[in-house]
Amino acid sequence: MEPDMNTQKPRPLQGRQLLATAATLGIAPWLLSACASAAPPARPSAPQAAGSRRRLGPLEVFPVGLGCQWRPGATPGVIVDSYSSRFDRTAAIRLIRQAVDQGVTFIDTAEAYGPFLSEDIVGEALQGIRDQVVLETKFGFDIDQVTGQRLPGGRNSRPEHIRRVVDAQLRRLRTDRIDVLLQHRVDPNVPIEDVAGTIKDLIRAGKVRHYGLSEPGLQTVRRAHAEHPMAVIQNEYSMLWRGPEAGVLPLCEELGIGFVCWSPLGMGFLAGGVNTASRFVAPDFRAISPRFAPEVLPANMALADLVRTWAQRKNATPAQLSLAWLLAQKPWIVPIPGTTNAAHMAENLGAASIVFTVDELQQLNAAVAAIRIQGERLPAAVMAMSGVEAPPKR
Ligand SMILES: NC(=O)c1ccc[n+]([C@@H]2O[C@H](COP(=O)([O-])OP(=O)(O)OC[C@H]3O[C@@H](n4cnc5c(N)ncnc54)[C@H](OP(=O)(O)O)[C@@H]3O)[C@@H](O)[C@H]2O)c1
Image (cartoon, rainbow, N blue to C red; front, side, top):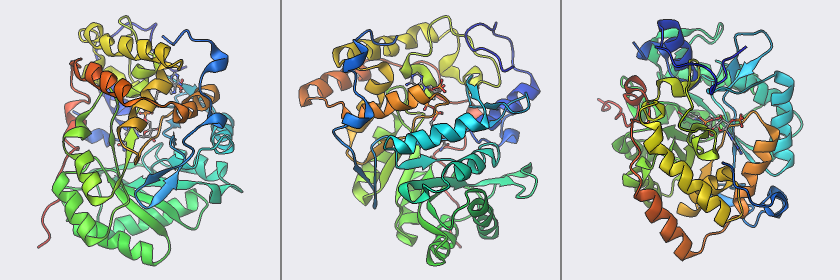
């Protein structure tokens, strides 16, 4: 069994735990040495969603997507997320199909999630309904395409590797094209012009339709976009982490690039899944994330309390309120909440029908801005892969 996040005692991370935990966010391990009490029937739900479509760069999708980031659990047949949830392959496939049935048209996954397992599940789930969704996946780590083993190279965006990965992804995803291909993290050894140029060739070959970068440096975005126009940037963004507001979002606006928010529920924090007594143990990624450490949780709970208060005011759940806040920031932002729970998935789609008045949004933004979140958003070794500028093309 995987550990329960709220009942285990905290203990120092051992090497093996650290490695397992590193894998959860698709991170190369070697780089690491209340719910609203409002009446349920009135809560927003997907079918009544007012905003049923939004622009995402050149694409058009349902405002709330679905993140599919799962890997094998320690027990055979068990599939786990990056936190403390688990289910099995049948339930995962059912969840994805239900999401599409309920209106989701944007699905995110990655080669590194598993590795391979998440793409394989997504591929099976989309059989017969593939054309109804925009399918996004990622490359960028040095993963053996046969065994799924992580190789000691760390990141790998060399052109020949990208081509090999995409062919393998098409097989796993059981499709003839990837709608959005993302570089998971910028490779410090490969000029971005070479990466974008390789993807441009894959687009010409019909294997890829659009591309984007995840957690890139700003100059790298400009250089890639000049080589071939980029569709999306995918960074962490939520009320818990508002870093993109300083540079990435203005750049997206300037260049017409869509923005996809990862961990839009603050790894469950904004959905009401964390309290001051929460203690996380590996492989739950929050066990090594400084902002979830026992000493900062009491201060950080001010944000969870704010979300709960506003959720009640808007007759929504905390998760819905948190996703609606993201949607309200820009009309070209799409969150991809991750879940193993079909009821949570359906609940999250209801965020699309929550509307804020200008005055409400100003009040909420000001209240969020007044709360100083304590603790870094990610462990230092993971942070080191964010905002990286690719080397110049010689
Ligand atoms: N580009 C990158 O580097 C990167 C990094 C991380 C993630 N991602 C992508 O972003 C996606 C989402 O990020 P994430 O999973 O890290 O974080 P998240 O979406 O912020 O939070 C997921 C957590 O929230 C819980 N949850 C979801 N909906 C809920 C609801 N309505 N009520 C209560 N709890 C709820 C989930 O538990 P339950 O299973 O119990 O619902 C899970 O523990 C991933 O699936 C992945 O596709 C990308």
